[in-house]
Amino acid sequence: MPISEPTDDLGSIFRRLIQNTGPMSLAQFMGESNARYYASKDPIGLGDGVSGDFITAPEISQMFGELIGLWLADMWINAGREEPVYYVELGPGRGTLAQDALRAARNYGLEPAVHFIETSSTLKDIQLRAVPGALWHDDLSSLPTDGPMLLVANEFLDALPIRQLVRMASGWRERLVGLGGDDFIFVAGDQPMDAAVPAGWKDAAEGTILETCPAAAAILFEVAGRLEQQGGAALFIDYGHTELQAGSTFQAVQRHEKVLPFDAPGTADLTALVDFGTLAQIAKSRGVRHIGTATQGDWLRGLGIETRAKHLAQRAPQHAADIDAALHRLVADDQMGKLFKVMGLAGPKWIGGAAFSAVVPES
Ligand code: SAH
Image 1 (cartoon, protein in one colour):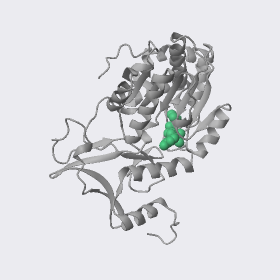
Image 2: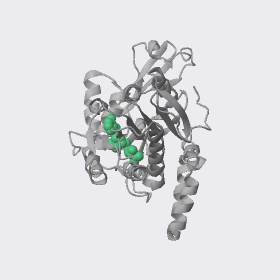
Image 3: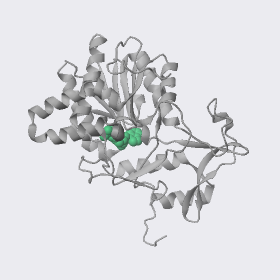
């Protein structure tokens, strides 16, 4: 280790911790790394492919946020235009999605109070400039309870800390982070973890890895409880699959490239695929309607993104090529169209749910 390395370098802190108390959980490694990462910088690129570490859908095109705003307005109108009504966004990034969604919703008379869940003070400053009237919370517990909630979370769940379980000859164990020299390596814990393995997976082949995300499960439990009590609708958008699959999806991205997730904790975005199947089950267990889980491509096309792109290009022909490129990026199967999913949830009396109708709910 170079002598000049600052003592508060997160890698050094983790090494000391592991040396003193033994291997640490992957959830702690990921949670503390991402807390440090998001607090220290604005990681989201501006669509030029150079700035930031990664690019998100709302930064690719205004069409993304606008269609979300229209979807929410449609749900709210169907449910009888109840007031007060709250727009809640989890991890709003640069505030671009909220800005676009709220502008589109306003055309339909929907002007909700805006509440953001955000822990990064760097990003809060940027969000304040984008949406001046917003209020901030560290978690969902302090959100208002006196009206329906229209909730959006784009690329939020994938950044929450996961645990990994691995099937050993002797049974299931947690995959922990230990040290091999100065390098972080996976080691199997010595506690039996069979009780934590979902039904149907207990006898999986040796070497099988399963991921769980207790933080995402807790958030879905809370959001669904509020939808059931307060009414409203929610859209969770992320890259993930519609049912639990085996294998490690833990990865790190820095400057638009995949890097090794153990290399420099706190300096790269650590993510894992979202298990939408399990999250939909949690929502349903609380009496909430799972409208469906669609691919991002199908969902945006169902809301008319192609027509919208055509109109924008007619109005600004000098940007036609850019608009077309953005459309392709959002909906094409080999871009964000297939790997990204949109999960729609609604409170008991909240009917409809555009663009999910062609989708057969998978559970
Ligand atoms: N939704 C935005 C940003 C995605 S990046 C977009 O689509 O562009 C992830 C966002 O979640 C960031 O705003 C980050 O600061 C926030 N975040 C990550 N972990 C969080 C946590 N545990 N609690 C609250 N916000 C968190």
